[in-house]
Image 1 (tube, rainbow, N blue to C red):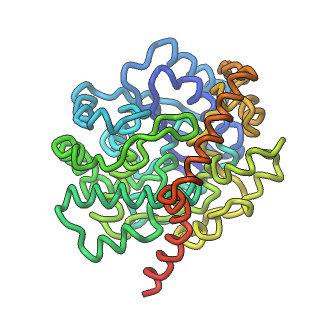
Image 2: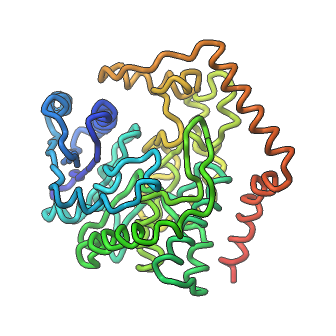
Amino acid sequence: MRKGTLAVALAIDNNYTKMAMIVLDSLFGNCHKGTRYECYILNYHLSVSNRQKLMSLVQLYDQHNLTFLDIREDDYQALNHFPENHLSIWSLEMFFRLYLPKYLPMHDRILYLDADIIVRADLSHLASIDMQNKAIAASLDTAHLAQYPTLMRGLYRLTLLLKGEISSVDRKEIMSLNQINSGVLLMNLDFWREKHLLERALEMIKEIQINAEQLLFAPHISYNNQYLPPDQLFPDQDIINYLTIIEHKDAICHLPTSYNIRVLYNPEDHLLENAFSDEYLDLNQIVWKGVTDSLVTCDGVIYDTIQIIHFAGVRPWKAQFSNHPITPFFSKYAQKVGLEMEQPMVHQEQSMVHQEQRRSYWRILLSPRKMIKMLLPYGVVRLIQIIKSR
């Protein structure tokens, strides 16, 4: 692949076509003149009309290409082994990224992007990052402090299920700050093929199906008006973390925060009017930036300029986020591709949401157990530092 060219992949269904158009439009619109993106859309029965919409957008930019990768029926059915109750709000399309080593034998690396992303910079430099002996390059998953213990519990339970026991080495890896968010994933496809990671991932999906009940260790809860299972698996993400942390030690090349800025990094500030301004997007305001950036192992990356914004946990096109500070920013991109934003909630509906939020806060304050759980992550950070210093 010639200099300045980067392969990029997305996985979508028919409902996310216009979201994918936003990703591609922001990717193309923020690249340098000499940059060329070879784009691929992983899909299962994507409609002709939606393919035409995507192709029409790409044709507005002369230097980029788009190819549709149609997932074969047998490959799709292989993913159906994953337990439905662990999918929750997700779909099987999120597993499609696992097939990239198989479907793109001509490429040695590719940048995978979730469809809820806006690219803010040229990304061609990712084609030259040294990934020798690394499976992936990605950013630490730290949307907010309360999340990380959940990630550790998920990987701990998955390791116990697959290996039958937790060794001291595995325990140290699980307790370390190393689990990545799979929404922005630079994949070393040669490593995946050499180590047969796709085949191993499909084996894991079958094992999870057989022993699914062992993974259920907490009830579902409502978070940000979404129905989430915080103590169940983050399906593809936990599998990728297991492969690159437990089965293949030191197989992650850590990227800075700038490559996967989660909108939900400081929820309290989102209550401020016009908080999501250019000033608010100063990366130094992100709570975990210092910790995340201290773990970076990739050379030639950019620390202090926003590269990618990831709307995980916040959906500005949904009615319940109509008053979120990020919504005006996102709506500019939505208008360009004709994505219809859901209408704002009426005052009565907003009041009901706020009342429920206040009730949830009081339930935490009046429950010592829940209060401890909320404060625990701050102690976990110190615990991790102690473990890593030994």
